[in-house]
Length: 519
Image (cartoon, rainbow, N blue to C red):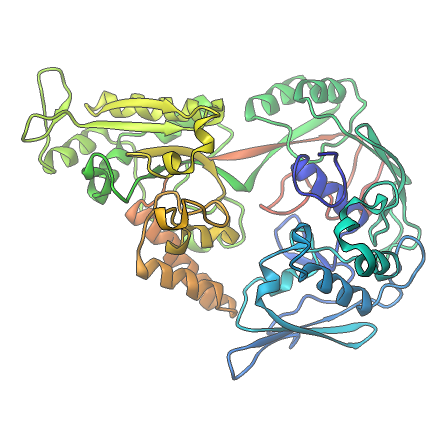
């Protein structure tokens, strides 16, 4: 698929950053992870009255647009554009624009050209994420309405999504060369003020080695998207004299061992006491040092460091320090004893054997290999089975792994629904579920209730308290066994000013692009 300003396939974070340069939406997350208004005058909150909980269980959010905001072609931006955007997003024949948020909306009403109210069927904690990247960015009604009304099946193929794109952001598309580059020119009429840099050239460099060569040669000042592995980031950091490489924790990438909690083989895997013992066999700090060159951090929490609510929760969590002697004692207390070969056996003299599966990439094979080595050191027989590309297509095979699966998965608050019982891969749903799914196949009504409560609790204090209970249960019951987080390398040239490479998870590097500057 060709890189464009609509689809979310190849291109990843780089595409999202490019889109935000030309169309930031009503709001963005700043470097602290706090949502800031852009095209809107304010973010709806309970405190400012723009977010209201209604007596019948429904709610409303109201957005007030900044007067004078204009599209890149000079047309005024009004609530008519947001009404049109919602119509496109709710159209079941256009999955490219679909998002779960639209299923929660009861209706939308424009009170005047600059005020719009969204009615919600029930409390929805991320209602303040309307009309932003990741849901649906505002679309210009005056340019797309005819295509939508007359031939909506072809709307995603319009040149609007490439060389003819019109947005609201600090930069506008001046030149689009497919597969090569995009030239962006400063928007003189940007609602937050004209950008300080007149022109930005965005190059498409899919090869990581070529990208590093361009950075070292001084022809790239900033990277959109991800550089690649931590090792590549360190190599660039050590060689680059004209810039710095920072490492931030992403909200969507940690390395964890997911235990099989439905039909475990051996059955002892489903016993939390055994999982706790296995955690004590792992020197995760050493894993961070050897596999991540000390850049990362031990994953004691489902939430990555740097997320807004991390510090409010982490102090309560159980810790599993490296203690192989304690681990051995805990396994013996479960009825196992070491044989002459040092391997644990049960009362029937059966070897305690664990199979670890992983994705085929080195990012998961290396930690899975290390985990297997630690477990074998204490006497747990272990075999490592990296999945082949062919087996990755077999949903039943992947869902019914016998013991543990080492994966790099999302560990963000917005991914909490994936831990719900309803996301469990089962024969009755043909092992297909929305999102990443409940890999551990942990079914627990209490956890489901906590997740449901979190997703429908708007007051922040009560919501964080519920979140803390969810995260505690994950850590206490080890429904997911966190190993370490994957930091993202962020190279920025020394000459580029006012850029925030070290940011909270989910915060885009381009959130304040209009403030970037050069000497």
